[in-house]
Length: 538
Image (cartoon, rainbow, N blue to C red; front, side, top):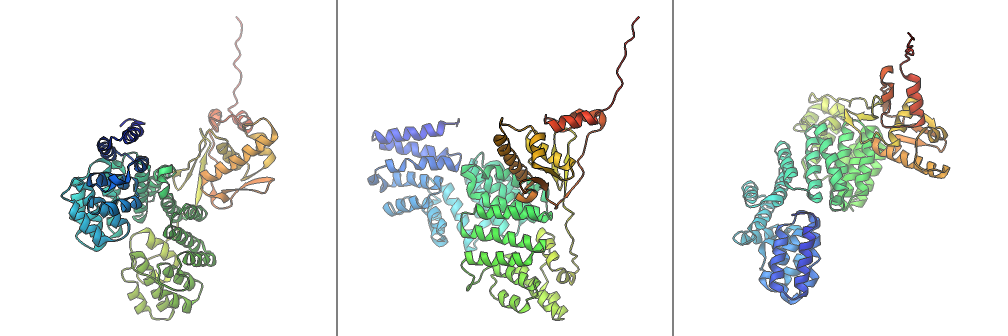
């Protein structure tokens, strides 16, 4: 369907409704629902609902059409009203409603009732989800749902299947399914952001950091669109995990704070804070980590009572700070339902036993904890003695460095990955200037040296401030470049490698694409010196 055609279809439905052409309008609603390409299309279709007289809602045909609208727009409240007016008329969509409310027994019953009807592909999807949640035989159910679905719907079912595999610890299989989902959901920002973020996080767990970062950067582009923002927190958590695995702790902390800022639910916010706390712990800031974890417990409303996975992390930090009794007490409140939470609790118990001199019992507590994944590498750095009991060595991350080349367009890399630094922008020239000048320049020199937009001093100062923000964003954290109002400085961490320069014979490509005064001066000063050619007369 061409761009704008869906909006025209919805406008036509409105016109039919305004004319009282109820049956034609209903058929067009069904056609529109089947041709939806994105969640935003579904939301656009949702706009016709108020034009449908309520007396029509009780009819089974209109109930089914409105069920499609509720499903496509992700609106369980609309489906609840439809089901209340026409119970049993649209079982596949009532299964969707039951699933969103966690009533999986009802979802399974309703989905099975819908398998023989015209909306069987939707019913098959929620039957598979219900069996997953109830511990049933979900694999053949997902295969059936995939066979029944097509196009974007097939991609959504595959996304469900991949998530299920991931929850079960089958990351290798999940990775392949997430990758297929990315290719099947089309240009839907909501689904692309979800599939890409989950693909990246799965690659991270498997230790393929390069693939993880590339998938997450792609997902970030989708998640920044209006329709994909629901997944922005998830994407930032994934990037935080990648950068933390590389030992880039300031950058990782910023990513987790962005995840918290964009969180749309308490669980999302708590997960972001937990990621920040683990980053602080690996960075050597255990007191700050513990404070963040207690704040997360307050947000989860479990600070004073209740069980939660956070308490395994809190116990670990208390133990690292020497509070053995506090760690033991806190561990009794740890929810160990997820694999990594149980593994962390096992490490804390092992370390407590080791400190008491009970090494054999400690070794037994470590049984099943190590693995060949990023989680093991990180936790081994926190508790090296416990992992040494089972022959696991704590391997430090590779030193954090930044490489910048001015031999042609300015390009920057961390851990071999190019940063999103646009070489034609003043931010790229400022980074090169800072490195040429040993890591700092006065604000006045930067204003004189850079070719900034604006005619007056105030306009140029504002543009320099925007340039600083752009450079910080490209490098990945606010503290990458600091200023006290007089001097602009690169952060002392990481290690900034010497700027890569062109040889004299290619000095004209230094910072290619920039015509700043300082760039032109450098080219003139460092260009190859040649003798003039003298043409003698005859």
